[in-house]
Image (cartoon, rainbow, N blue to C red):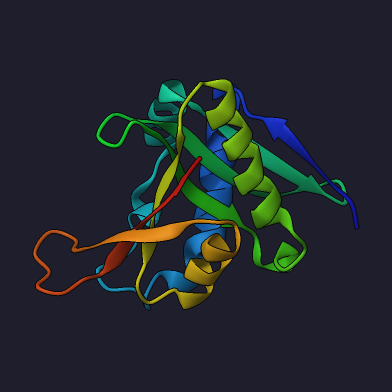
Length: 157
């Protein structure tokens, strides 16, 4: 199995959106509050891409995953968002490769690290990012929630 990574163009916003929807579908009725990924449209994804970009992963001649990135004004770090790998392509190193590609984008932009949000309920995702050098920096709540629903994780160099 081999894969390649490609910088997405704004013309790819619908493809990026489709990969996000397909990858997050398993969480549709299991996360509370519901994932905002299901509300993404090609227009909302294009707006995020205009602030930074997206990277696409292709595996065995099929689109397999994507990730968004853009500078986060609050932290001064590069935000890594909507990391999405289609179920058939998981556990092959794509999430790691896409994450490291965003790290390269942060270095190229002269930013001192990366930040992201991960749901408390998704322990496997937390473990993935910890294995890449991210650390939990805050427990946060979605609007209207009275308990921690996600963690901010950061990797700073």
